[in-house]
Length: 125
Length: 125
Length: 125
Length: 125
Image 1 (tube, rainbow over the protein chains, first blue to last red):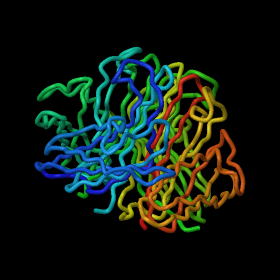
Image 2: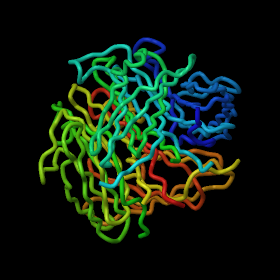
Image 3: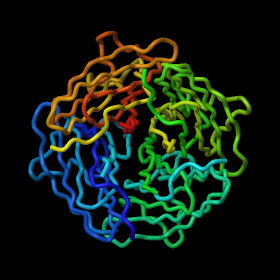
Image 4: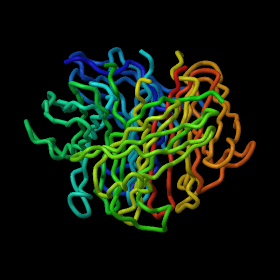
């Protein structure tokens, strides 16, 4: 299948709410990066996390097989280090082949959940 | 009328919540792809659905007549197969003429609904 | 001031919820198109509204003075005809000079409101 | 680290809800511009705020150090003047080096919060 997307993406918003209401894991507050690899080859993805007051963390390595999507919760990234909750961050997503990147948050700090989503910023190559 | 848009689009996020609160169909949890065909000709659209752990499904065929919009709920796509609920997916939207694609979710799993929307990623042609 | 933006934009999603909770006008369910004209000249904007099952309506004419923003509720467009509630639509926004277009909805059908927003699709010119 | 982004961005939507529910500052209603500077150099950012019925305000000056993100609440911009609540606005973000800009709102006017987010519009340079 013909690929679609870009190799460099950025998400300027990032924030994992510190607490949650409702059954886990569906209603746990989370920040997600959705990756689509529509090509036939595997995509090797590196995620770098930026903060307001310290050097960036990562890269976190994610493999997205050909013709697959992966929706990665930032909550679950642990290697090389977990991402703190209730802390502003941003992310840079780099792949060796073109992919598509979208950003979603579910915030269940209050009894009723809220959602946001946006396509990430696609770099020029 | 002059057309606007692209012929290849992708939505990396996709998730149909497993349950709902409120009157059907308006408040049923749903994942929607909104298609606008501003041209005078009909658009023949093919949607391919990607998963995390199996081969893609589809294509699902949708006709958008000239000067019309269609808001398609993924919940209602059944041919060649329905899309499972509570499952991560992504989608590739291909049209024979330029269209515009936007992605929206209404999540009514809890008593009060949540919404998200984003323009899809537009491929280069 | 130097202008920014494009002259042709599209929003594939459009839906005015049929009812509302909370004080009017802030919490009335609404669908908004936000227009920014950062240039020094006035922008003459034409909005065409597309439906699923009838010919497009409009154009609706909106003037955005130089160095001004206007946030237009689709609920308030009446000339040449009002936009029905609880009905899928889409819109094409055309300006004689570059502007920036963003789409927002406040849905207060249930007791607690929900929000969505996305930058519109920018055409090539 | 290689930079990503553009030097001119616009957000056509802007609105700080007039009131809030829940603990401050996390649940205070706010409008945020998220800035990512993935380069090694500092970014000098100027934000101009546009209104519907008066001349623009600003510029507001923000420094984003190299390899850092800053999430700026419009609520906290005070120099040269604060941004009124319950008022439509829009913003132009200009940087001396490429950055990435995303727009987020948390609305807690009602008991349960709502969220929206979108990547900003990226100008041509």
